[in-house]
Image 1 (tube, each protein chain N blue to C red):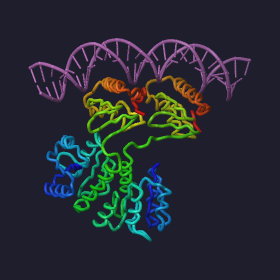
Image 2 (cartoon, chains in turn cyan, red, brown, orange; image 1 turned 60 degrees about the horizontal axis):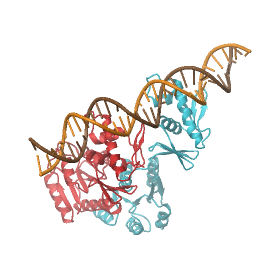
Image 3 (cartoon, rainbow over the protein chains, first blue to last red; image 1 turned 120 degrees about the vertical axis):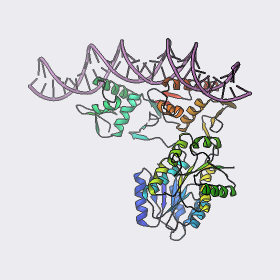
Image 4 (cartoon, each protein chain N blue to C red; image 1 turned 135 degrees about the vertical axis):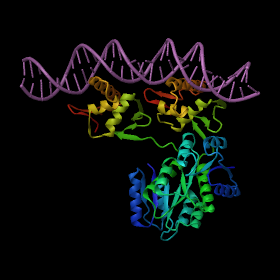
Length: 223
Length: 223
DNA sequence: CATGATTATGATATAATTGTAACTGATACA
DNA sequence: TGTATCAGTTACAATTATATCATAATCATG
């Protein structure tokens, strides 16, 4: 999860930004002590910095150059004084972009995402679901547990992914069936049972007993 | 020397931009045939693209997504229609920045320099991907391993590049097929298999066994 | 146009995966 | 106690996805 460091004096704006970014799966963290940005920066070690130009104590320019002394982290300036001179100065100082205030939240998010993509190179991390110490990598289609790698077949993977996406909820057998065999073909209802059995066998072999619970008459459940 | 590809219809603006960038030690090259941007792009193989949104024949959005099919080169949009929606669309499409017209030449240069710095200085210099000691040079389309140079054909190279760009993730066969043959012609599904086989044979001959894993029913994976 | 390299195709092989069927066990309830 | 329902198990068969190979078509290059 990417950490975003928000250095912005305006309390409301900072809060709104943080909320919006959090909504997009980013870990947004606001600066608290504007006299001592660097120690917060070091503690957080963020993947990207959003830096207001006008700050108490020291200007954004100052902090940007401080950051650049020890880090190549992407820095995006925010300012209502987005004139050409300030922009050029900021960019020359090692900043990566300059967003004029007021800005559209959508644009902010898009810019942050674009910069993260560019800076941390396109291979975005896999989406991973975790449960009881078992890690299901939804992109690699593998399950890891207790330092073992459990290979899953297509059906096993789909079933497990579906159950973990609905952790704590009962998933109807029919729902699973429609996912695996996009409907139609009268697949024997028992076929699902067999697939679940096989999946359970692999889980148990790895030490994950009772991972998938049967709710008779309702469906399956992981919790 | 960094090559900048300027795709801008306005003759005067384009010329001025090119002169300014040249003055800063950049190799600025203007698009000539707006119906066929991609071949000029391929010929120049630029380090950065400045892309006007409003172009004859096809829009900048179109060319941006075409470029992104085969390249991660930084793309900066230029447009007088710099409204929020266009900006968000562009960024989501893989663009890196969006400059409103008219712009200050100083700002343009500063942005270009900042983007080049971010894209080439900070991260790995050339387009080289590494895995298990094998180096894939995406410019030369060759693979180096254990002091051997492995020559790859177009198809072999594209497959390997795609898999390495998604290291650790399963890539669906269909995804690969669309990359290799931009669909249309119903290429025999088996043709992909054959190409993978040939690629594997080269890899094995060089000592790279089990480089490409088959996830039956899901796709291929390098990890 | 001739040459060799590259790529596509079709036939066939192979092995992992999946589906089926027959049986078992459990639970509910008439 | 008997019967019906539902899910689990197992072994086996069928299917499917992928691999391999030989051959034909295509492409690039001089």
